Structure formats: structure tokens, C-alpha cells
Image 1 (cartoon, rainbow, N blue to C red):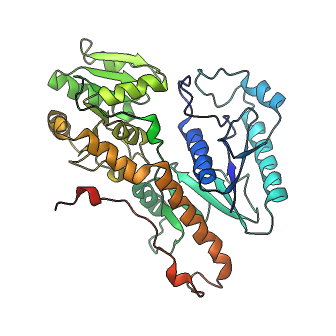
Image 2: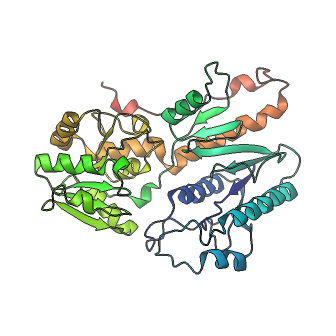
Length: 387
């Protein structure tokens, strides 16, 4: 099948396996890995994005704007520098130009109507509005969505959207949940012998639950390392002798911290749409201690790959017992459910179901052969079944 993969207007789509990167936009990582999964499955993938983008091998790239215009807005960004979103209030004009050009490219190269998939991972419909192709909004993790065909990162976030739209009647049959794909080669190897510290890896913000993690570590007199963007000084002040503020770290350093930490704390105080860092930690063999809502309900298997908590007492208890979690089980769970091969197949199966809609007068029509279509894959919990 032909798949258009639309990049973000504020970043270049570059290889997230580059060890020199400090803080690649996590949503842009989704674009790169989505393209890789589809290329690996043998599909024709056309990435439309900013100049300087380097989608995976086998994926064609088409510039949405000129490099000169990109550089005027964003300068000559070094690979090790954090990504930026806009400068000099010029983002609005660039956004509109980007969208118009993306739409033109899809219209020119899409082929017959409704024969190509258009994957839009950045939640704005200007670049795909009225495009006569199958538009799929992928990786939804924002409060807003526009497409008829939607892929949410977690069941919690899909339910949030259904409630937000007051869609009590249902009948949104082609909205599905496909979680994040994880490059297992980027994490590990698993070690059973852990160092005596907890880890927080996120933006240094109150809603991310950083203070909760520090207070639990202080309660148990266990050192805790804070790494991520932002000012951590107020959290360090909670327990200056036991908190290490590591700031922004390279991907190599972050992975090493995850494989050595006793646990990753990810106690977001809001409904986290997904929480990708939890999967990255588990892929490294690091148990996760999270809140019991949002995307963690899908990713953290309570008592097996970590603990989901509702009160401070539960967080303390989880931290006390986290050494009972088997690091190898954590990684196996992610490998079974979130590897690029597994998630790529789920995307492919979903896209195939959309292309089959052309053969039907209504969605309930069942042409010959439809009865043999396999069901959509679901999370694999078989590893936790007792004999």
C-alpha cells in the first residue's frame, strides 16, 4: 500500500537512534518509527516534512518548505541541542504554508481517490482537510482530535475523548487503540543486580509528580536521580542530601540509568495519555511505579512489571516491595506487546481494514472473503498465566 507520513512543522524528522541526541521531540520520534515500521513491512512510504529530515532508509522524503525558509525561522540547530518550536512569532505563517504544501503534495501523488493512507501524527487537519484519501490520525495523545479514523495510544485516552465528545451512543467503529512501538535494541541489557537509587526521567514539573517521587525516596532514605528538562531546584530542596539533579542527559546516559535503577517513578498527577518513559524503563528491565490512571493502566501490569498507586502510602509500599519485580519479566512484557514488529503489524492490519471499506456499500456489508479476516490484535497477557 502507499502511505503518506506527515512530519511535524516544528521539527526535522531525524534518526532517534543517534547517540548524540539530547532531547529529540518524542512526537517526532513517533513519526520516524512509524515510517520505519511501514517500510520494514514492505510498503511504499512517502515522508513529507521539513528540509534536513532523514527518515529511515527506504522511505522517500519530500520537502514541505524550502531550507532557506526553515533556517530563517529555526537557525542552524546542532543535533545535540534541544528541539525548538518557534521563533519571532513566525510560526503561524510557516504553519499555514507547511499545511498548504503538504496538501498539494498528497493531492499530486496520492493516485486514485481513497487508495492511499495518509498518516497524520500531529493533530491538525489543515494539511489533510478535504484530501480524497484515507486520512488516519495516529498516536493521539492530545485533548483534541479531528479525523473519522483514529488511533489512540491508550484505552484511557480513547475513553477520555469519547466522554469529551459526549459520545454515549458509541458507533465509532474505526477508532482503535494501538500503543507505542519501542525499539528494543535501544534498551537493556537487563541486569538483576540494581544500584541503590530510584529514578525520575521527565520534565521537572509538578504535574509530572516529581515531588511525590522525592518524598517517597526521602521516606525510605533511598537516593533518587532526577533527569530531564527544567528547573529541579524546588524538588532538590525537599531532600538536598539524597536528590541528584542530573539535568538533560544523552540517550545513552538515560538508558544506563534506567537499567541500573531499582525503579522508575512516573507518578503523573493528571491523566497521562500514555507515558512512553514507562515502556522505555521496562524495556531496560526497570520496574515502574506509577499512578493508577491514564496510559499506565495499559502499560504497567500491577504486581508484575511495577505498581500502580492511588495514595502516598501505596507509593511507599510499592517502593519497599519493588525488588520483588523480575526485571526480565518487565522487558518480556514490552517485547511481546510493543516491539516495532508487533506494532507495525497492528498498524498494517488496521490500514488494510480501512482499504477494504471501498468494497462495501455500508460498514456492515460482508463481501465474500470478509469472514476470513482475522480479529484485531490485543495485548498479550499470556506470560502472566499460571500453569
